[in-house]
Length: 392
Image (tube, rainbow, N blue to C red):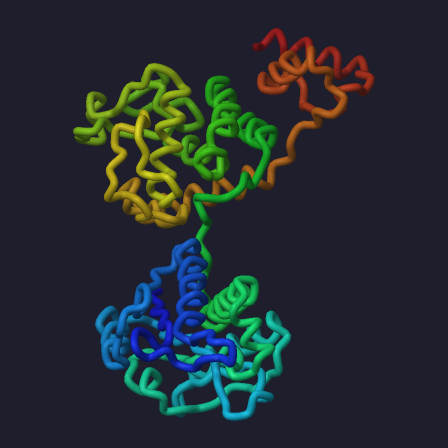
């Protein structure tokens, strides 16, 4: 889906000007930039009719939207009236446009709920940007700059953020946009859940142990370790490999050398000196794809840290056809993530620090189920654990 965001007015046309001098063109741009960021973080292909305070004629704005075959057009404005008491929010759509009406209704409802301003409703109009666009379009009037109180609100970053999020929520509801799974995200699960999940998948001890590295190294890059660990599970078969490389490569994600090569050429795949190097390279490569702040970066073990990759896959789903040829590659990883997140972590409460390593070893080797660390064991449980130990 492609959405064109239009920050109304620009350059020598300031739009409305509030009693204290706040210019509409500036407010429109700030809200539009926040909206654009929200959409980009969710994997939506979003564009803006202007970047910064540059003069862009109305005809050029609609031409841009039409030329890229945008699916929706959202124009952002602030209102004005001769009376300083005029107040509230309203949203316009083009005469008779059913899809425009649906979008206007949803966005208007979210704006009113988020801002608490008076609901002036949705209205039909023949504004140029509504009639000259080939796609459903709306024009949002956030609040009245001519009203001193609403001018004060419009000038605050908190209010601008509320407006951007409300427009985004309304757009999602009206258009059925499905948000992608962000690569840059706080950990969606704990390392204990990851190890329990890997154990259920009969992963190798090496792969189970890698969870500690992923959860330790991802915070600096802002990458969700669940994303990286599940991708590694897919790439390595839970540490069993079985393809053209093996564990001696210390390569947890199938990354190739800077020169690249065929998928079935073992020389085309990077060898790392340690698992820490391999995991670090994996995280850096994901962060680069996701457009993390500070990337591309210097001194990375990632051999394919090419600047042109930055921001080309913000969501896990977008990795399909980019990181790997399969279009469902990212969706496969998301399914693994859902399994991991739903896995119950072993109960570590009450395990003494000096016994933690032994407890972890027993759990990962299937000798104990990881529950009741302080509980009394029955004879059956003792015999079962002894039997399992014999099989290790």
